[in-house]
Length: 88
Length: 350
Image (tube, rainbow over all chains, first blue to last red; front, side, top):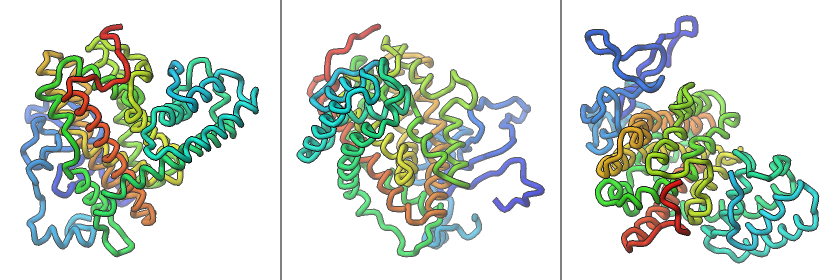
């Protein structure tokens, strides 16, 4: 999101608060062997909470387990201002 | 789609008018206008069969059209005027119903509302436990006949899935516009027609022996089913309601992954294969992506750019939830009493 227009990153990873990592752009999802992982869409959400039944992809289970990506004291400050301290 | 059977004087008058040439009978148009004016003044619950069917037909002129109806009717001013007569009270009714939820949402006093904060508000709204759980019933208890009914209700929207939200693209700019296009590209199969969500749903219907033609079951579904689609058309087709369509999409996506997992489980329980469950499986994964984009980039981005639209974003989300609850109540009332949730007997196979 802070890319120089002359040198845009080829892919970006969006750290969704209390949720997955959204990956946009030009990238491959592969196993260590290099074999591609089945992929149905351009922009994917990668599981961050570990509880998805369809890993590596997110299936929304993070909402059911109240997964939090910030410690409680940072999170409170982050949400009130509408921004997280580190993540723009 | 084929012209539906009328459900009262408004839909009867409208359908009779539409089968003639546009503007051929000004007297009939004026009569219908007067009839609708009179009727909407006394209707209290806008989930009315006659009104919702008339609205559905009028909106359909902007989508796939009605068989035997001249496309020239789409922008006929007299017809648009009649539609307004019903849209106004429908919107007012939706706002009133939604106010229970929106009144309880605490929005910050500050004028600027970052996209993360908007997304958090919407996720909170989506997490509220509301109404009976149709998806749990489908997962564990539904009969095959109930699964067919479920698909029949859903078919009114899913066979044109995503179209109502697509209307909003020209009305947005920047981040919100890019986000909506990103979501919709996925909805429409990312360039592969067989992966289009509407195509996946048609395949599910065929697996249950249902007629997959668009609008094939319009006569079978009650007013609440029509209203859930009309609400989307109302929001999507009006620039002034662009906040509402963004909020609607966010809520829709945010309440999708888990229920679709449960729907898929129900169909698997009754022995249906991946050709049938593919629609639900796709949505579990797709909507986990879409809810983030819709909540943060679309709705959140829109509110950052146009802070005055926050109220409408929340309205759209709350209205989606209210209508969904009412639909769920209708379904579960019928099924728990061993009754059909549809209006008339539907043949089990083509």
